[in-house]
Figure (spheres, rainbow, N blue to C red):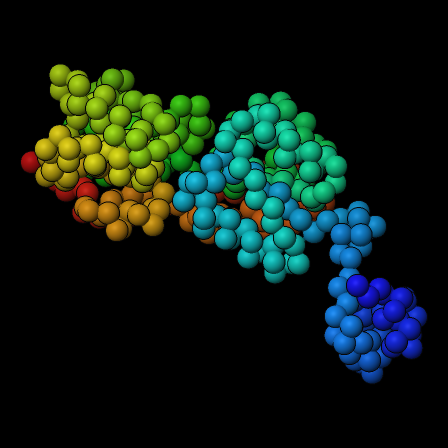
Length: 331
């Protein structure tokens, strides 16, 4: 493998000049730059970027921690992050935590050992105090989820307002018995539940806690949620699911019970995943601007690396109700 010294010797310049060419310095004439670049191409010289970056105390690498890499929600979020990172000559390292604090800490050793320049969390497993201690020492951004008391930049939507809009859509269609399939211990889910309850209360409808069931964030969780709701003496006529994946499972189980969606039971999801418009029936949902959320998270991360920007800023992105065939007026 050729070395930088060999490039310099063959080009008839100093090692420092080769380094300036590699770093796109303006202190090199066009003729010299072309001569050095020709030798680099001829020898197929590959600079040691890791060594160079370590000398600069930077890695040009951002760690992104996903709670569940199999969740298709994150595909566009990560795409947005990558596009901004690549535009600024950074790279993205994606790791899956399974919401396991021990595994999360293993990956955070990359940050503590200076193998990455910063970390973007999607849903931290660690508690608030541990998170805030980390954010005081390193560039940290929280993307999508929000925990009260977090002392780091947050990129999210107004989940309470989104939950309100989802429930209110069903109320406007004439539904009075509205169930909800959620998940435990997730800040965004709790906010959506609050929005759901607020919409019911404003409409003068009873908030029946039996209509709120917590399941896993999965297709099977949606199926189990419907089983719980339809074991009730008076099952709901509409169901608000905390995600489109849960909504797919809910519709599947309703069909298995011989019920028609939306004629017998209306279903609304959340996220606007790619499956929502393709499923039968197509799923009414609350769309999150996933790509833009990812872009903004990376933009804020690069600001934090440079030591600029508000450490406690909360950026609220816009959500949108998308009405499809899974909701129709109650009979």
